[in-house]
Image: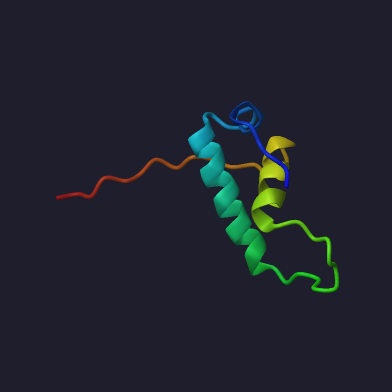
Length: 70
């Protein structure tokens, strides 16, 4: 299992918390696609999403939270 350091994941994200959120949401997106079950050495989706984030292959944008109008 590969260990990702905070300095690795913050290269393409603002901070480590945002990078973990982006990777988690991307892993959920990957989970929706059909996978080839015949591959026995397939990586976990969270590992795959963190690798893609550290390599800069994930593009994202931060949408500010809307405040409810009263």
